[in-house]
Length: 431
Image (cartoon, rainbow, N blue to C red; front, side, top):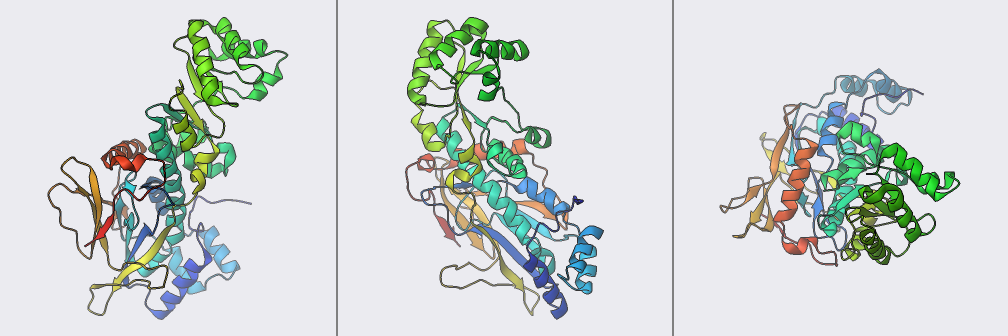
């Protein structure tokens, strides 16, 4: 089986059947506006974080129907020949704007706006939602974790708990939201995320003794390495580690047991042995609540896996992609919206800004319908141009998104980072 670099078939069947029907009807080229937003945040969450925009723009650039993709569509009779002919020349030529990657967002926030013909916009729906829903869920969970860590280092180490490609995206999203390093080497190569790693219990168990294992690791990686000390007896392993490496030992890792009590005991022992600069890293099914509970412990870094790559119980952001405006008979855009009982949408092209108070803290998300909302003098515009006339204009990097997230979170009310259940930290107001 061969694979292609094209992202065109990372989509749902019905995107192309809608395309075919709209082409045949003559409505496919009507100018339209699609918006991506979420109607709700997970229960108890007070804000969310937009991630994946950079990945998405790369994926849209690769959204091309080459010979392999078109052959599949014809052979499986998914769409007719006329539609295949149209797809053969497909290239998005419209405009895309939205929140800059790393921004906090809320229900109703127009995080991505796609403007172009119906045909051009509709077939991007699944790709957009797939990337933004996943990456934003991971970044939102990661942001809660780094906030709970209170400045202590966080290490992403969830690759073995998710799909191999999802693992790379998770590492990227976690780094955006403040994680310091990842265990995933492909994330290091592809996105420049700093990587780290030393050894697992299997390494210790390979040797006839723990002393032999520690010696081998120190000889290979140097005294600044991190030794895993809970394979047998924790306190005995710590004594042995300092005996072998001296006070230059980089760190010890705890991966089981009562981490709070063990961290205190290990810190006291390290200090008594003169290893006052040796750090303590804790792992073992951590989430934001466990990290917060360890706030009083002498811990220097947290390694997080399963909880992070599953969005800490919320692996999607519940984003939707809706047609909110279409070209009318006059040539002007007219608002349209779904009006079903439990899934109401707000029609019309949106713009957004963040209203701030005298202290610089965010007070509300202001969303203008059909026109830009009025700035009261201290508001911050949230929408940026990403693609214009089919050409990418956004040049921001992952480092930019990481810095933007830190600034955006710092701008929110203090209640935003509280972990106990509560309301969304600022309201969304339509104008």
